[in-house]
Length: 305
Image 1: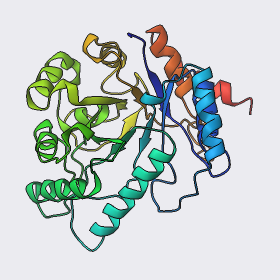
Image 2: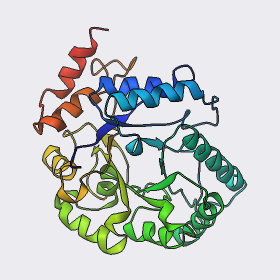
Image 3: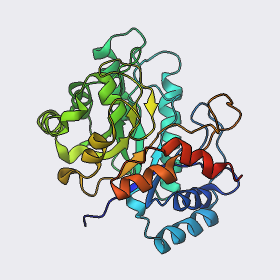
Image 4: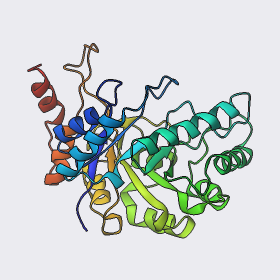
């Protein structure tokens, strides 16, 4: 099937849970989506309501949302690269996130590999491998997707070679793949404007069969800046044409593509409230035509609130 699978990050709250996530995704014109099962910065988690989950699955089926391409993002506080006093917490919390993802009937979980915090990349990667091999077993139904990172601070996984090292150490290699983030690889130093060459490198070092998710983000930074600051679609250093080329690339058909672009304020001076851009960015992507009034149109739309 050659359908475009496009969506964005959406919310997941205690009351509406997965139903609220589906409703938000549909309001943007999405046919997939990604969400955190709780705040990414803390451990507060509400119990999964089975009836709400059942209703959400029916909504997805009714609205042609392929459940197999819906994504959960693991929280930032999980760091598997540094075996300090929080290492056991990170491993146990990831186990819980996998359990929650399974309870929600979702099969894809994006995970930041982690930061070695001075231990060095090789030690950090060894720690990640050891942790994942404790977390994943033969009964694990969720597929872990290691996200390519920008190389900020002491992040592991900012090169294809580092990701490949982790994958090669997996006891259950069929349960671990890759989420490629366009902003991150650009900021890490890959020339996203020559994406065919990037895919050739990826295939040689990792294998295209391991590319399971794409995060489609523009970047505020120059290539190789190692800063990881996302920009709205088409307004950054990557640009509209290069992002569209990636989204519609022949070799990437069927792969879920998720937007994590910045929310927008109603004007340049106030920061009181932020509004999601995804309805307008997804429309641009479907039309394959840049909206040069993107921010203005978003602001006009939400001024009605």
